[in-house]
Amino acid sequence: MNYSIKSPHILAPINSVEEVVPLLEAGARWLYGGVIPSRWQERYPSTVLLNQRTFPGAQFSSLGEFENAVRLTQKGGGRFALTLNAPFYMDEQLPAVLDLVRWARDIRVDAVIAADPGLMKALARDNIEVPLHLSTMGLASNAHAVRMYSRLGVSRIILPRFLTAEQILEMIESVPDLEYEAFVLVGKCPNIEGVCSFVHDSPDRRWPCEWKWELEDENGSAPPARVSGHYADLAQSDRRDGCGLCAVPFLAAAGVAAFKVVGRGTPLTRKLQLVSTLDRVLASMPPLPASGLSAPELSGTPGWREWVTRCREEYRAIFGHPCTPHNCYYPKICGTW
Image 1: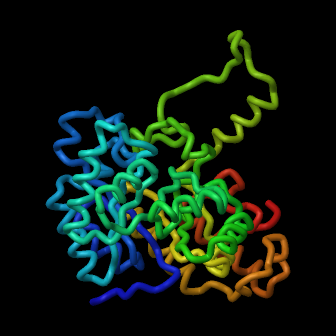
Image 2 (image 1 turned 90 degrees about the vertical axis):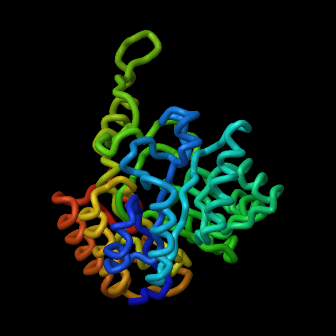
C-alpha cells in the first residue's frame, strides 16, 4: 500500500528498519532517525555529539540498515530525514559530517535535519545539495533568524519548543514561504535547547537530561524561595509526557505543515500509540479560520471546549494521568487550568 503525503502530516522517530511499515500504517508520513558511522565512533566518545543522542538504542545499527529503512519508507510513500542536529561541529569534525551528508544524498534521503550554520555553509561551499530542515537546536525563535537560515538553504523550520502558539502564527505570517514543523507529543523541556549543554545520555532520565544536581547559592546556602520554587515547578516536568494536542487545529490553521512525535530510542509500541493518537486527532480537527483568531478567543469558538475535553481524554489514555501546565506545550490554547 502506498501512503501518500498529505498536509498537515506526522513525523515519527525511528531507529530500526523493522519499525518502518508499522509507523507508516499508524499514520506517520515522515520518519526521522540517526546513524553514527564507524569513522566517528572510532575517533570520538559518545558524549561528543553527532545527532543529539548518545545511547545506542536511539541510533540505527549501521549505514546499511539506515539505507534499507530509507528505501522501504519511500517505497511505502513516506519520506525520511537524517538527523544531524548537533548545535555545532568543530573544524576537525566537518569532513566526517560532510561525508555522511554526501552518502545520505547519494541514497536519496529526503532531508537532513541540521542545526549548525557552519555545516550549512560548508554544504553550500562543497556543492552538496540536499534539502535542509532546521533543528530546534538552531534556535529560530524569530522571523529574523528564520530569514537567515533560509539564506543558508533551509526549507523547513522546526519551531523551538518554548514559542507560544501566537508567536508561531506571527512568525509564519512574517515568513510564509517556508515550511514549519511543531512538536506535539513527548519531549517537552523547560530548557532553551539552542543554548543548552545537557546531554541526552539515557532514555530513562526526565529532566535535566544529564547529571544529578543540587541547587544552592554561591555560598553553599539554600537559594531564595522564588528560585527554589521555580526549580521545584520544573522538577514536575517530565519530558516524556509533553503534549500539545489541543493546539493542533490552531497551529494547522496558522500554517504549520508537520507535527512531530519525539522519541528516538523509545519502544515501538509506545511510538505506535503516540502516532496513532495524533493521526486520530488530525483527522477530527474542528474547523478554524485561517487567520485573525487569537488564542484567548478560542474558548468561544463552537465545539472548542468539547475538543479540549477530548484531547485531555486522549492524554490520560496515553500517559495515565491528567495533563498539567508543566507538561503542556501550549497552555494558553488549552484554557484556564
